Structure formats: structure tokens, C-alpha cells
Length: 144
Image (tube, rainbow, N blue to C red):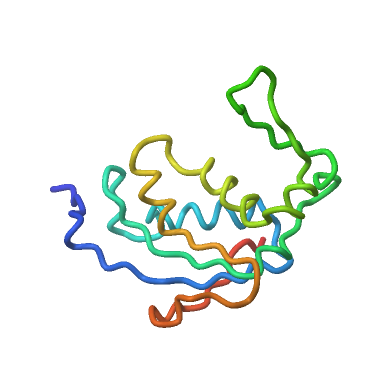
């Protein structure tokens, strides 16, 4: 019995279109991370990027469960003493696409391959996107 290992030149990538309106952030992010890693393909190989492209639209209509809009804090280090922080509601007002991209980034593996996987994620605030030529297929993600 031999184990199949995918090679980068054998991979056929697809484009998926996901509508994030009224979807829960964590459930949607975990489904997107699986597609970016390529775990939905039978040829999944951990050390090769076998994932597909994902275009997410209407990210400004994404939702959290419970009181996370007020209680969830995003913190980051600026290089100066102390940390900067903001709530999820403040981040949604400034850059709503950052909420989903950070959630997906933290669900990917922590290595150099994750940067390559994350570059296949395209997030847009409104219903329009510039990837019509790739003919992305609609896919329903983030549902129970």
C-alpha cells in the first residue's frame, strides 16, 4: 500500500463565492479555513498548499453571538509600552473585513504555508467583487 502525496503542479484550484450576510464569524471562519487548507479534497497533503480560492462578500453584515460586539477585545502591540485595544463594534465600524481575516488567519497552521493560504482569501465589504473573470461558484458556508 502506498501513500499518495500531492505535488504542487498537480493541483487544480477552484474559486468559491461566499456570502457572509447574517453568518456567525467563528463558524464561517472555520469553514473558510478548511477550504483554504484543502482539507475538503481527497488529495489533501499537510506540507503542500492544496486549497482553493475563496471570495467573501457582504462581510459588513457578519454577526457575533451573544454580547461579543461589546465584550470582545482585539489587542495588538505597537512597539511602544502598553497595548492598543478596541472592541469588536469599533473594529466593525473601521474595517469590518479585518474581523473575518483575523479569525481565519488564527485557524490556519502557524507556518510559512499559512501566508500562502491566506493570500487566496479575498474579502470585500459590499456585494461587488473584481473576480468575475474567474467565475467563482457560490458555496453556502457557516451554517449549522
